[in-house]
Image (cartoon, rainbow, N blue to C red):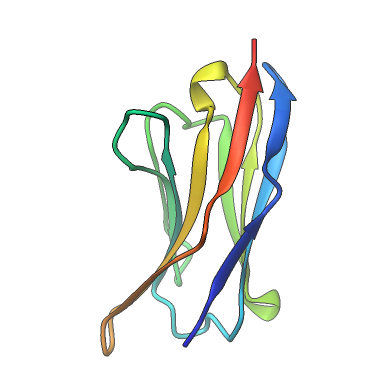
Length: 117
């Protein structure tokens, strides 16, 4: 079964940038949607950005224009470039993958992003 491993989290000052990576253990060719979610303390997990296999993207309004999701099928990896970070972006970020054929949904273990003011 495909496993997802996130990396790239850390501590950054407000206004800074981070790039998160999500590496899949197998080919993501058959994965229909890959995305990033986040969960801040005391809050529900929310969608940050998602990308379909055809390249369509969807962003949460709060990150639109600051975050960019990209996907490299050759490297079985999806990225989240986060610019102009704000303290309210502080959360654990989770990678997610969904395959519609023989439905499968996977989650990574999460990576912590902390933005200091």
